[in-house]
Image (cartoon, rainbow, N blue to C red; front, side, top):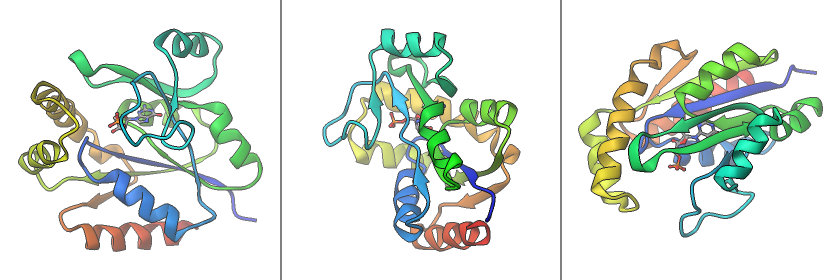
Length: 190
Ligand code: 5GP
């Protein structure tokens, strides 16, 4: 039996990772999805337990103290700062069943997993074509205020500095090409 892999997918906000993640999960039905916990409020259309496990800030902090997270981070500065984290329970049940798991986390979480997780990890960074295009995508998406967009762009600038620490980089300039590239990459491992 193949060793189960913990796949990490990271990008900047608006980098296209949610679209690519959905495409991967459709293409590889045996790949499990790690639902993250967050203290950010649910957005319209978010489904509890499917998109995120929504926790209050206090509950999140209690679970940190209990050692329930494989990794967690405060993502985005200023008014958007919220906890996000991967619960050990979300990963362990799949890995112990021999299933590979995909998690979509930020750069801080990636470093924590690299340091603390003893199993096999494959990390992939989705590279956006430019920060200007990210700005346009975030404005077009319409679910963030202008202040939040500027904060996300600041975070993005920092995150792009760490892209080279990942095992693989997929350029998301043209979405169809990025979908093909990421499927070809995952096929090598799955
Ligand atoms: P959003 O609020 O737009 O759903 O997500 C914001 C960012 O939080 C995502 O771009 C992703 O990088 C990060 N994120 C989501 N889940 C996790 C998690 O479990 N751990 C960490 N460290 N970051 C996460």
